[in-house]
Length: 216
Image 1 (cartoon, rainbow, N blue to C red):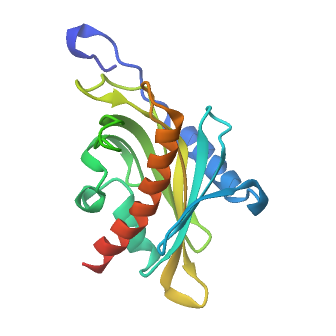
Image 2 (cartoon, rainbow, N blue to C red; image 1 turned 45 degrees about the vertical axis):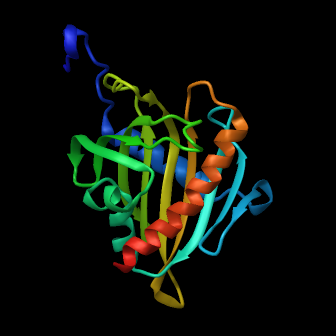
């Protein structure tokens, strides 16, 4: 049992095995959604971002895809919870691994910077994260948990099932196809248009920041 300050009991952590299995199945289902259901939200030289209404909340499920010049394992090591992510992800301001179940399974707390001239204030998330094999590559995925006290001056956001598929390109094994599915409920009083603008830009920037980090 975990106690918070003041002796209040914290929600227990879920059993990781069924949560990991359900999360993987959800992401694989997203990955099989036909092209006709997606609408382009943003295109850059590094990635294309699409969106469709989320089944989980009133916002959107975003899909991002681009080719990254590196091997699958190294790319995923830069995305999943660990020492690399904080170094290169311009949106992330802190990361703390709260619990580790196995090498590929943990609960982390992280914070993000304000966005759109601080219309979107800094956010905090507590996510269950799971990394597993997928086809010839890897899938790293996560979902938020209502766990722990919210850090002062942050709004607690919530990530509905999200994840990144990374598989080597068949005819170019030194390159990988990276496909992400993100549906973040930022919470707080925000105009939906601001959220949509921020999400599309954040996902496009994620690819350019990641590519720069992999080259160093």
